[in-house]
Amino acid sequence: MSAKLRSCCEVRFIAAKAGVINCDLSMSKGFDIGLERLTGGAPSARAAESLWTGVGRRRTFFLETFGCQMNDHDSEKVAGVLLSRGYRQVETPEAASLILYNTCSIREKAAQKVFSRLGEYRAKQSEGKIIGVLGCVAQQEGEEIFERAPWVSLVCGSASYRKLPQMLAELEAGNHRVTGLDTDTDETFETEMTRRDNPWRAYLTIIEGCDKACSYCVVPYTRGPERSRASDSILREVRQLAELGYSEVQFLGQTVNSYADPTPRKMRFSELLLAAAEVPGIRRVRFTTSHPSDFTPDIVEAIESEQKICDHVHLPVQSGSTRILRAMQRTYTRDEYLEKIAMMRGAGRPIAITTDVIVGFPGETQSDFEETLSLLDEVQYDGLFSFKYSPRPNTPATTMEDAIPEEEKGRRLAILQDKQREIQSARNAALAGQTFEVLVSGKSRRENQWTGHTSAHRVLNFTSQEKELLGTYVQVLVTGAGPNSLVGEHAV
Ligand code: 5AD
Ligand code: SF4
Image: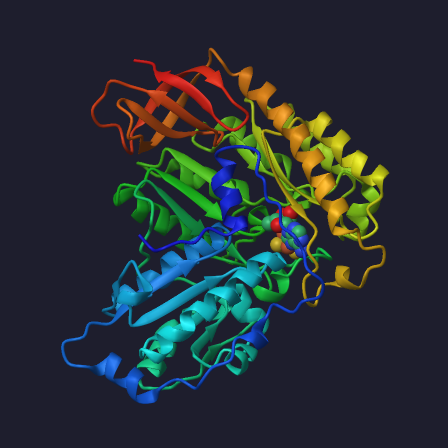
């Protein structure tokens, strides 16, 4: 397992399984993320050399991941590349010759964490360890990282991971400033080997980057333009995964449903979901994150017609106010968004819907905020990830007037989360008495206690007398519920 320090962004995805996410990120003024505090000497060439080439020393790496599922999966691929080059993964930075840090910059707090962590790694470099920064902060800050944290030897954004083998070779040859900062790549990051963390569910990135231009978001800058992976290559990998014993695949993309097959086959996203579901051995196909503007009826029809396509859609709304949606450049109005919801609610099979909301966007009035609250009442989401607006470098929203005070953002966030907690408590309570299929992913220390996820991605903790259930699919009767999870018993 790669070591992971869960950032708020990542925690929210884990917590998705648990329901309401409390992601109370505070925002400090400006974009200074404290790099100038991190001063230190240039890397010690001799120390590094001996570490790489020293007799009897195996090349080892420690990889820490912050951020979303895309970052998680990128780290799995990075680990695969390193393992195939003879590196061994270790659990602590102390045991590693190469320390890699896969970073997130979606909100300021996430980026700040990276630099405080880099400060901690400073002493490690003087022990001859090689330190690399990957991911969104690497892309955003670029070579600036070398200036301010000279103990870092590798700075590589996600669009350059396919060049990792060359970059590793350069590091191994003693180069102390290796960069991969492409943004205009039209390739995606495919590797011969990916070391996956979860033995039953496999992530698969089908589209990288983002061509939307939401005014608050760094992703188009850090992950570059949208690039879709060839459908035949995706399906080949799904077949390989099924042969390896994975029964659930999760298609990933910042706007996964904007998928545009680059091959002459021109498979639609919904066709890709259906084709993956047909692969022998695959029992569940998930996908995240969907963009409302590209959410078309054929996706709902695919979910309706194929039980293996999970009955869960994560459809970030960001705000319930059309005025704020315009300022956010979200490309849909409140009513257009609600039409997508109506489409899902009209499906022959219930579909769980979760969303993301940003509170305190510049200019958001009390009445705009109340429109977001009323949207929650109207939609009745099954899960919500909520964030205080955090200004990000280079994004148009940073120069917008009428910034909302931090305290007011906090107040709105708390109100929003309280409302959602009530909604979820009621929705979950209404599931008592129903039976769901669960993919069992955990066993509690307590006797006979297991946990897993339903197709709708709800966490279901249940009792069973069975001795071994991990990785299996079982029917569970729901006997109770809280706002964030269900409880039940194995229905035999
Ligand atoms: N401030 C606060 N939240 C943000 N998100 C993206 N950018 C920002 C920002 N600058 C949130 C959005 C997005 C989720 C992944 O993170 O809600 O859907
Ligand atoms: Fe960011 Fe908007 Fe793209 Fe999502 S759709 S990654 S919020 S720019």
